[in-house]
Image (cartoon, rainbow, N blue to C red; front, side, top):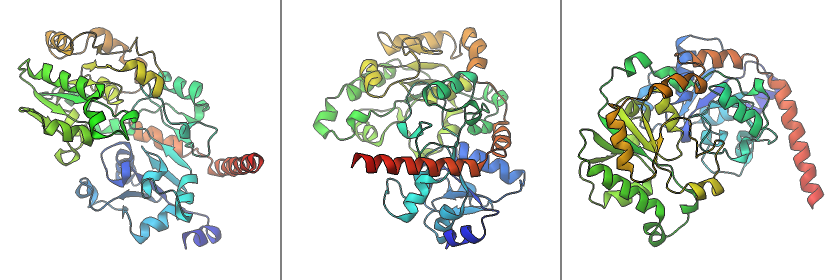
Length: 387
């Protein structure tokens, strides 16, 4: 039906906005939707979310909320002219569903990638490369530093990787942040792709589990006056919940959004997570625990030299040594880090959504759709040629 309407009435087509798995309203997608809703901007903007999501109550009172799985959801997947999200288009449909007419429409829909963190510590999947059919029409960046990564490594022109800052940071009031009561130490380690399919016995013997467990124990033994919060992959939570972790909080989505948790964090301990950049933006000290750096660089990769990280401190011997240093700094970033902040964040206001909106007004969707058709034809020729 929506395809029929598009053919006979190709005007005033809506824009669909969503976040991870259509289950969240706490990152750049929600922040941008909040902006266009509050400004009553002309155009039909809709926000997609599951009724069972923890964040549903946050948006249920707003106009143009679309329930995932409803008739309107499927109608808008086809009718909409553009997706806007901090995730790939697949998160608007049924995750990892690859078959069928609707799935193919979703895969090729023009979309703006708002990002959910600054690029640097982890290479993007090749679906984001500019010459791929799956590439976004626009990839938002935060600084000249990040735009250079996108143009030099992913092949985007500067006008397709505009420097606007991340929309999610519009939700952060830096002046207020500096006066917050920061009473938590957050450990946030990323998952390793080489552990996806291993059995329980192999995982129990993994360097990943042993290194992180050791770090937690060392921090516990310091008897700090901060609450220790751990937020990781569900499999790690299951293992850690069986261990002796008194006084440690295992944080899940049901405990509240990560961005709200971050407002009370005094120290972030991570490995390669882009959350480190948000901590930097919020002026929270960061410790990098890169215990498997060589393998990570080989199997995942980084856009920056992990031996010369631009901020924070890196664990060399015991993580407790780094924590002691942060305590000596009264849980504050160094003057050098604060002075260098502008290199990695071109804007430190709450106007990223406005800048993003201004950029989107100049997107030529007709030209983009022509380019997509050309890529489809080239892909078809490659398949035929290989055969």
